[in-house]
Image (cartoon, rainbow, N blue to C red; front, side, top):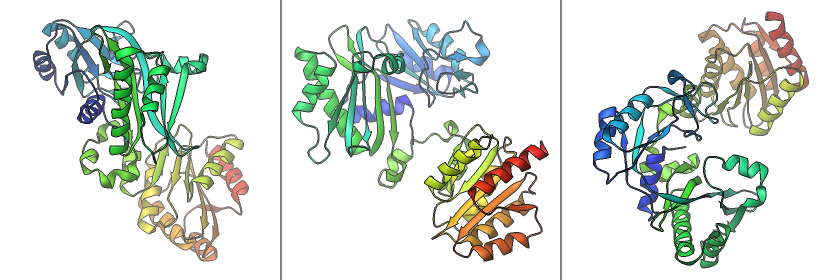
Length: 399
């Protein structure tokens, strides 16, 4: 689960992380009122969407010469103009894709005089089972290019959660950022507080870009992206309330209500599979046969009829889907339950695209019988290779 920048900074501030003052706004007037609460004379008006690259982004409605989603303002009227430009319009960044995201919220924050920008992030290193701090002296909007072109400028410090953040970790972060003296102490302090926030919220990622040295020698977090481990949300009811469902794909949001692992993709063949590994193999073999998957969907090992029906309906709600491949290996999952769900969903939504089903495992014959006797135009497949060939052929035939 991801949250907006203003929510992230408010949360980090509670753990002692230094952030500039700022206020969220849902309207132009609220943005102006927010600026009145800040000392000034410089303000920053930021579009709040779940995507990076806002500063270099462009608004679809404003033309190619318009400014992006992060703007400086020195008067209330400039704040008003920036807010009016952003709210309700669609911001396209390198991370949103061409569709972009509509801006419904703003963050008006106190402007600071920046001497130097850095990058600092925390994430789980699954290879080592530790928390990694990633630091670079090259903070700012081009950090992706830095990682690609000059990876030697990216430093990783691993922290064993059994011992936690130690003084030497702080010194390592300061050294990676090439800071000395009082700034080195501030870097170690900020890193330790970020670590506390990471553990305290069950975060999956905390990305600070930029971490900046201000003109008066202070180290401050000027932008932050925070995401949480969804599996831990039951421990953090207060964090779950920060979720902004308008920022999420409607189909992925609907899938989450049924505990389905669903990710929308750009292809045209919908997939329903049980097990992440089998789902990946299914997508690969569809591509190998010359077409592309429209989604990743894992119904899990213990799905019931209602869950399968919901999964099927979610796939069909995607207008790009031209055919569906169901690939189920019944271990814990019974093939007859899958078949019942497929038949129920297909009848409910008036199936209008080709459907190929490959079943194997527990109660496979009962499942095949249910499909065969359903009266629906369902194509049975013997194995995964056969299933992929058949769905591609069916889709091409319809096209």
